[in-house]
Length: 426
Length: 107
Image 1 (cartoon, each protein chain N blue to C red):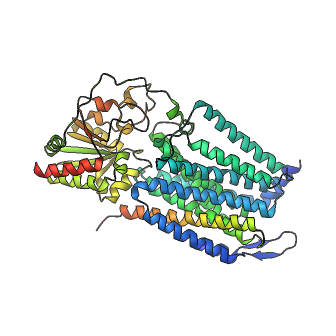
Image 2 (cartoon, rainbow over the protein chains, first blue to last red; image 1 turned 180 degrees about the vertical axis):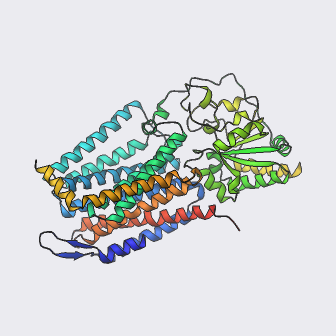
């Protein structure tokens, strides 16, 4: 990357086709100043961010890249006023994609920070589609008519900004990984368009690489949730009505910390299912302590990682790796599911939808068909949760009402600390 | 059909076949890379890809370097573009590196 940047600064020549004049890169003080600012700010931000806030950070940096692509398009249009259709089309397209990526990433960032709530309706879906086609139509129109000048840059920019916001707003928090990955590939495509513009192979290759990789990653994630990309984008998840099944009249049973400790100490096999709650409570280190305390009692402990647990693919893996949990103990869903019937206790820490049996049994459930960790097949289930609040999918979880399930309410970190203390006394 | 000839002229000026080859290779490479990485490493992978598309910074340098010193709008926007592009590159790589460090076997 450094080579590419230096090479561009030192070697790039702009040949004027009419006069044959060769101009080199100018404004060097500004460029170096900007790079310096960006480096310092970027480095500090990246070093200070907590591991649990990683998805937000990636989304933020992605938005910066998108904004960069959009700004390039604006400046290019403003300074060179190109006349050919192809040239103008690429510039405007890059402006649109870059802006959408920027606006979308900012909304995704806000949502992951918990500052922006989900909002969606059926009408909005139609509005969104209308806006996309309107922008595309406008772009083609502007590209065809060279007389339409700078003013339209701002119109396309504003429209794309609005679309970017409306596009991410209705998408539920659980789908954020997919959205971030998708926006990531958008920015890649915007970068590739820049490569087209300047006939620059590095930008082209890098951009397309990210574009294709991001798209495949997005599709893989959708598969893990058994939903189509379209289904995710249209925000159909949050738009579906309340689940048909009501849990009224069914009761849950609670368990005390002491009883949990005793139950765990005398178990042979324990599987821990972590979820977003673990990340929120910053409990990954305590969780590792808990695992070690159990192993000291001779219990075999494994972690079951659902592919979409958390807010990014592999989010849980990153957290647990940070806490030094050995790589071999992190089992993927398909590997752990057959072992669950022989497991004495499954401890669900802050996970919800990924263990919801409704995905297998209730065809009317919005998550029906999503592969889950079959926690309900284990001999005993302990669910650690802060409250009976629903998961991100906003649906009831039958698992909590299962006869084998005991609820252990409280903050994951605090509860785990108490458990560790109790375990030492058993 | 003025526009068609315009497109044609634009495309031939780019050595279209070279670009097509590069495009195809990059697409295949991207698909291969992703499908061979386990889900466990998808977060660092996404973050890495995020850092890679920071190559837009090259575009911003070119655009800034060739704008005339008295066009303040272009200079301001270009400056902002370089700052944001650098943020993307540096932040992306540092974050990815931090994550990968944790996956290394501890001694």
